[in-house]
Length: 239
Ligand SMILES: Nc1ncnc2c1ncn2[C@@H]1O[C@H](COP(=O)(O)OP(=O)(O)OP(=O)(O)O)[C@@H](O)[C@H]1O
Image (cartoon, rainbow, N blue to C red; front, top):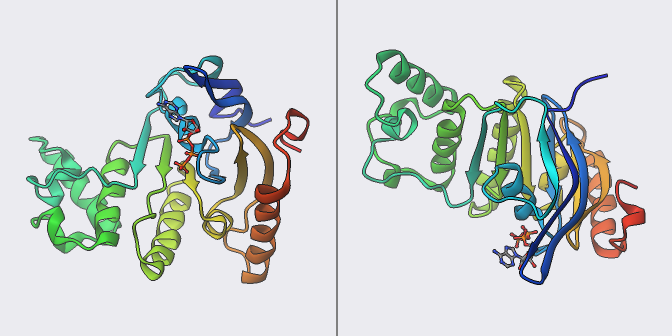
């Protein structure tokens, strides 16, 4: 049996009296692309912050099979440094020649070869997100967390970036967790879609990655119906 990269076990988070998460249980396996989808306030970002260890859970745990697993997060707000060139944003101004060459190779990989010496403000929204992705890839993460990375893009650029990111992650067999409000995006990009509702994971569906449009539509419809209608009870967790 394949060992999970990490396990979320009975995970819960309470802020003062507000229960943000309760009874979250799922595994993430090496190489898979998971999407967490659900309505605003459901708890998706809290799950991501607990996985990234930016916060500690109130109950339960996030258990990595290897405690040295490298995790990187890419946010919607691209967090690029405007005073550094695009190459420096990826290499973090490393003095090491091999590191600079690796940064340039990653820039080439994300289609920004000719933008190495310009600055983030000279890039379009989609290009900025490619740069943010390049920066995350530079760390050679075993787990990439994507927190609504495409939310600010226009519809066409967003579609292009969905394909682009899914292809890069598949090519590098990079374990990826995407958070999104967009049910179609989840179905299109992920191997597995987990619906998060009222602070817990209520449903899982196989994604439709690389499949025909009709299948994506069917998967999306099923997920949407769960988001809108299924009660978020413990009995339906993973059901
Ligand atoms: N620091 C905090 N203090 C108090 N409550 C919080 C805090 N962070 C999150 N919450 C609450 O926890 C719940 C889950 O929030 P979370 O941001 O995880 O949801 P989400 O599904 O990611 O929403 P969105 O899609 O809008 O980002 C919400 O009710 C939110 O108000």
